[in-house]
Image 1 (cartoon, rainbow, N blue to C red):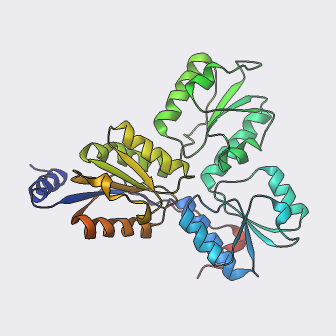
Image 2: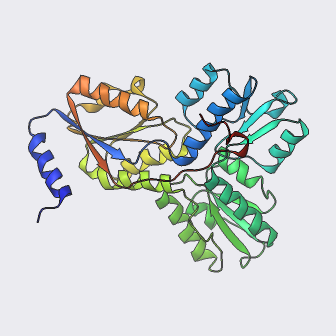
Length: 330
């Protein structure tokens, strides 16, 4: 018996002889549940509360999303001292430290928490481990908004590492009182390499009961790993400051397939596609689907591309809106 996937692959091999370019359009791609919740929260806040609406950090790490909301009057800030007393403030999907929450309270701000629940999970784990007197090794990227917020939960107890070599240099007070956590948007492979080194050096180290890397990050990475070998080129739609988008690009290259991260059509260099028959397209978890479709249309019009959509996983996760906005759904 020929399964549906085999039949589809055979059909595409036959069709491929007559087309100039094929686009393998990976699914799942683009917005995850946390990003959808954060963006919908900001949209509803604009409708529900007097302007201007302020957001601490970018609501999500995507240039087009941020520019869209700026055009609607939203003000993104990195310092709460610039936010007027009593204003409406959203915390971004990446989470904030207790210090920022306290500052918002002191300024009598109407604070709306749009933190992704999967990031909140990591925060709560950090608090729990710190209360147990454990030193916490946080695996993540220095300076990332999520890492800053997580470290703020227990700054005296958390040590940041990024690579196995960082683990080799670790000096801790008690190797038997350690725990590790991870940033939610890391490469699964990179995180596992660091975790393996931690377990080698510190056999008694504790880890979270459930993986910290979010389901959407893992699904998008898995799709690239599975599909990249069929492609001559990988295009990832997402912004340069999007950690999960960067990791998708890295994975494409690790699969020995040339890969580029682009914000949108304007970043495309036609020279990339010389002698390219098959392009894999995916998008980071904060990239709008409209940007994906713009890129597909450009390749269709410029290179005669034909789209082959390939679904690796089905996602049905949703997250509730912040409590201040649950009566505002329209």
